[in-house]
Image (cartoon, rainbow, N blue to C red; front, top):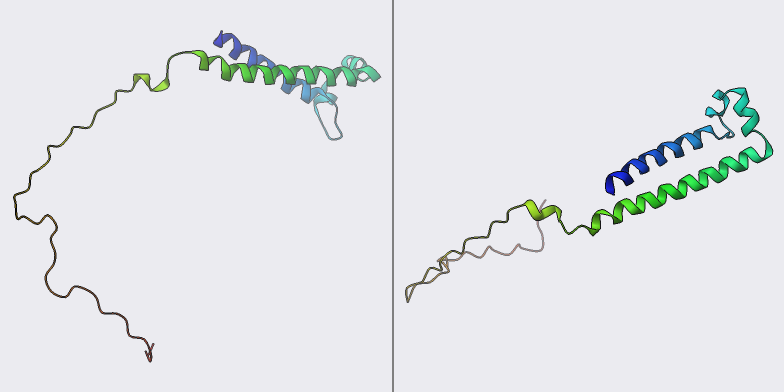
Length: 123
């Protein structure tokens, strides 16, 4: 089902691009490149309305296939991470301390830095 939706989505997107490019606009477009027979068919009063309706229909179909392409794969029970092997961390044995051992080493002497002096300091 998914490959069929992808092919349908590609066809709809190409159709949407072509239909938008064929429509006449204020600026230049591909509408001038079309032969005179298609100009007579599409340039009538109902031609512009017909192209607009076709554009709306193809745009709705594009939106529907886009939504279906996001929903269809999510119904599968497989996950992207199923094939990745997860390594469990090895627990390190706890080291026992001897009685009287100090696990925190405290430096001896005056290790506190002196506070900066306030007042007349020359810069």
